[in-house]
Length: 81
Image 1 (cartoon, rainbow, N blue to C red):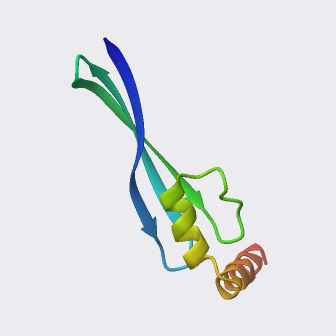
Image 2: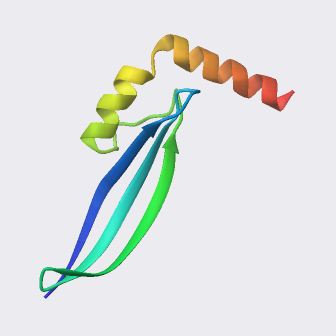
């Protein structure tokens, strides 16, 4: 029997407040892993995160304060200039 398991296996907060999320997709056959792939994405300060894994939501809620969002947006504006 084939089974597909998707899990968030790594969550990191970087200096600018962005939250990096790694998702692992495992293909299992009769309880044994036969394949796995990884996908990474970033939740930047100010991004919507309500569709994320509950643990990612909790971390974003704690890290993405008004001050962090303002600093991130200010840094992005400087990079564009």
